[in-house]
Image (cartoon, rainbow, N blue to C red):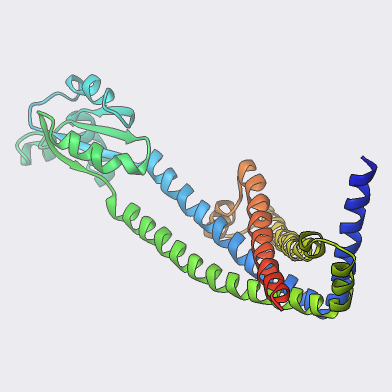
Amino acid sequence: MLKSLLKADYLLLETLRGLKRGGWMNWAAISTMTVLLFLFGTSLQVSWQVEGLLNQFGSQLVISTYLESGVDAGSLVTEVTRLPGVVSVTSVSKEQAWNQLTADLGLSNISNAAEQLKGNPLVDELKVKARDTEQVPVLARTLKSMAGVDDVLYVNEVINQLRELNEGLRWVSLCVVSLLSMTAIAVVTTTIRLIAIARRQEIEVMQLVGATRDWIYFPFLLQGMTFGIAGAGSSWALLFGIQKGLKSLSASDQPAFIEFLINGLQLTPQQWILLPFALVALGTSLGFLGSVLAVKKVAAR
């Protein structure tokens, strides 16, 4: 136990000593990590919100199923309800649809309008609510193929545009994060390499007294991981501050569309937990990779 504590104390002291020698290069590495992880966290939040909108559209989207003339909507409710992906089914008779249409058009003389059109020209309708966006096209094709169904209509264009937007945002985020990741690795590699060069004499002495290579260079790996953790903490603080600012804006009187955007950017409790873990994981991974590259270059000399 005592031996393990001494080893941990040595690694901690060596890591802090190396960070002190890094000087302003430490800030360059941490600031690069902060910018990278902030953009990564922002893109992750946007992706979550777009996916949430897709799910929201899917859960609220109603597929209008128009039946053939003379087919009663009530006769198909049970069959449609049993279809996979169906949340609920609402039947609308042609009389209900006619009354709603005349009310929307503001027609006061309903009987006169019906006589001019030679009766009620509408048909019965089933309003089918889908569970999610993935099942909407499949469910629409299934409904279209059923006996007694004349036509099926649903808002497909909005969903397709949201999917394309989400896919485009993912590719843009991937390119930006990849470029900044390479920059962060290069900065960490340069910083750790300079620290190792500044401690070259100490490293040579440790090698002469029999210290292993892993024991000598492990503190440098911890230094790189520290850059990632510090960047993750800074970026999380920025993201958390922005979220708090949005909440304060939502508390004040704002136009409806601004309030909608603010509410749309709020994270769920699960996302509040997942986001910092993702930032720390990416930051420490990049810091560790940059440190490994620096150690290999120094050790090869």
